[in-house]
Image 1 (cartoon, rainbow, N blue to C red):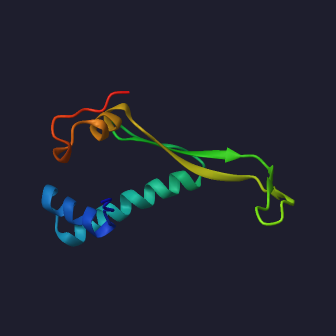
Image 2 (tube, rainbow, N blue to C red):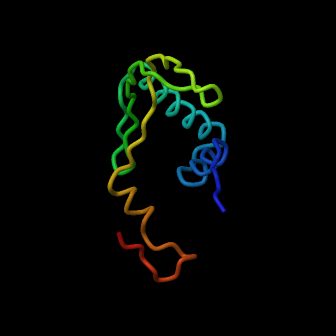
Image 3 (tube, rainbow, N blue to C red):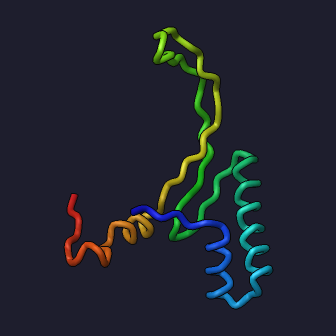
Length: 107
């Protein structure tokens, strides 16, 4: 079953590991997330070593199709957010998990 971690859980983890107060931990997390969001909003990338990179990619205008009618519809140019995990993170994700025993996936 997939589990999603929340801001409050991240803040609690900072509190437990770093030793800041809960309020300071929450503020620190908010400052980091705000800075990442501000950089991305300017169209710049964010690279976090051993984790990955967040990039803003521009997509040009293209023609799409309405699935109900089949009519062509223009899709306007837009920007999309892309995350590219680092090799280290990919390795951690693909490493043996406790629930898998000793099996390692091969590709």
